[in-house]
Length: 102
Image 1 (cartoon, rainbow, N blue to C red):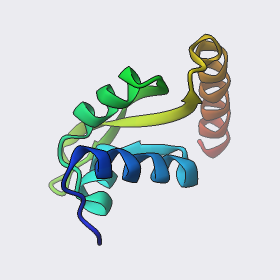
Image 2 (spheres, rainbow, N blue to C red):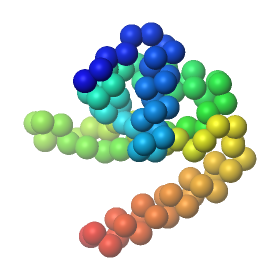
Image 3 (cartoon, rainbow, N blue to C red):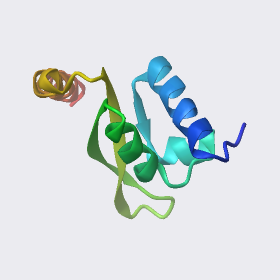
Image 4 (cartoon, rainbow, N blue to C red):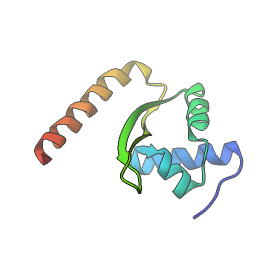
């Protein structure tokens, strides 16, 4: 596990993660990338023109208590006008797979 220390390295690690996997949760950022303040880095990337959406994902902690964590989805750079359409498609696909599993 490689820990990143400064903002530039953290931005690079996040963007590399997004290119491979498209989504990143706060738990993954902390465990896999060593980034504990992901929301700040996401805000900085948004300021630089990266289009990243955020959803809350429910989970149960180790004692079975419900909680939620942020899941960030990367859509590209400078494509804000396309975000609403892509996000709607992703949510429809998520709903379809959820109903298939249930």
